[in-house]
Image 1 (cartoon, helix red, strand yellow):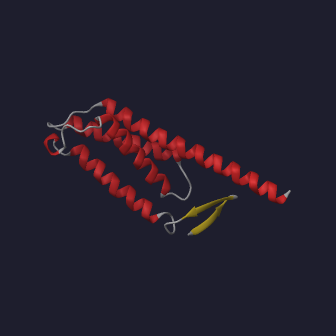
Image 2 (cartoon, one colour):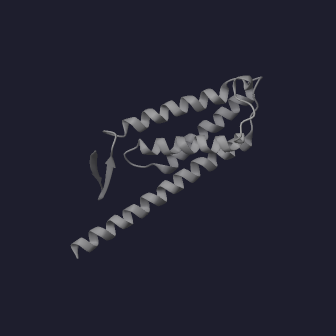
Image 3 (cartoon, one colour):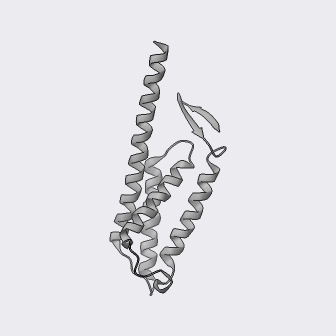
Length: 141
């Protein structure tokens, strides 16, 4: 497990330099999301127990988690903007295809999934930093 110090904040990376495994997972998941968004509806399983908009939220939340995990420094807003832009582009492409339709509710679900995971990770990171800072202060005092 590699451990690095960035401005007083130590970051542990269990997957080698820069989170290579997480970046690979992100790319693979992104390819699956793009493929699933652009294939004809007949190729997509019908009658799913999970509504489409929930699938969008989960998929984009997972994309956000793997994207952030692969970064050395967390760029929450930039990562969120990139993923929501990808979601919007895919909806526009779907709208231009004869066999798919753009559903803006799906884009909203993408944004909610990204925001939920991003805020959760940001708050978790902040809490961990505060806890680490408190522990260091106690050991020095």
